[in-house]
Each structure stands twice: as C-alpha cells, then as structure tokens.
Image (cartoon, helix red, strand yellow):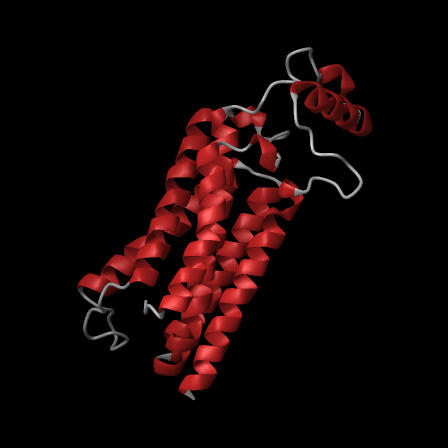
Length: 231
C-alpha cells in the first residue's frame, strides 16, 4: 500500500510538472508558425498584425506597439499564475498520503488542487478584478487553514494535535502568499476599466523575477519529491 501511495505521489508530481509546462507553453511558444519577437521592431510588427486581426488597429499608437508591458503585468501577473499552479502541485502531491490517513483531508487536497489550477487557467486567459479578489480570498484562506493545523489542529476530531511543519507545506504557503501579494499589486495598479484588454505578456517580455520563479518552481517541486520530504 505504501509503495502504491508513493507511486501515485510521483505520478501526480509528474502530471503537475507537465501541467505547469502546458499552462505556460502558449507564452513560451506564442505561435507554432510565428516567430518570437526579439527586438522592438519585431514586437511592433507583431502588435500591428494582432491589431489588424482583432480589429483594433486604430487603437494602437506609435508608442503602444513597441513598448514593453509595465512591470505590473510583466512581474505580478506571471507570478500569480505560476505560484498558483505550483501550490496546486503541492496539494496534488500530498493528496494520496492524506487519503490514506484521513479521507476527508485527502478530498480537500484534491479540491484545492483543482481550484488552484482552474484559477490559474482562468487568470491566464482573461484576468479580472473578480478573479484577483477571489485569488486573495482563496489563498489567504488556505494559508490560514494551514496555520491552524500547525498550531492547534482541527476540530471535530479531524486533527486533535497540530501537525509538524514540513518542507512541502512551507513551499505551498510561500507560493500562496506570492499569489496574494501579486493579486493585491495588480488590483492597486490596474484601473477597473483596463481589464478588457489585459492578458499575460509573452514569455520574452516577462520580468526576470517572474521568469526565475517560473523556472525554479518546477525544480523545487522535483527536488521535494526526490528528497522525500513530507508535508
């Protein structure tokens, strides 16, 4: 049974890594037939082509087409998507162990995985103020519940004693706090009327900090799995 649980654990981590790659693939490879814009001229041409295709040519000014996205979009929006997907990977990896010991918690971990992945996918496709507010509430709730389980346990006999803090849950809590901070920054910086055209910038335009998190997050998940840490 233990061998089976470990097999499921590794399989879920692998699926999570593939899912994270699939989620970000459209940003790393914007088009199968297209060429990734490497300079301002290529970026201007790509923006004009998109404006023609979507009927927004008249709204693209001489500076809009070649300008890089502001730091709010190049840093905070990618961070929110990547961190939510990474936190979902932790919940997916820890689900089998909790299903064996306490099925109710196992089901909760599965639900958290699905919700966090669905939220990341929704923000990736069409960010909105409602989604950002939901991201803050969801992730603060998960962090609060985690703190409760590490300090007092859970009522109704679900967890009479607090659990020890482990590397898996520390990683999940850190990623969830990143989501909260990124959503809050976006809500402060983006006017309510600007969400209609808001979208995740291509990978080449991401802030270095967001790129680093996107690269290191799967590596950390893999390292936790190979290290045999418990959450």
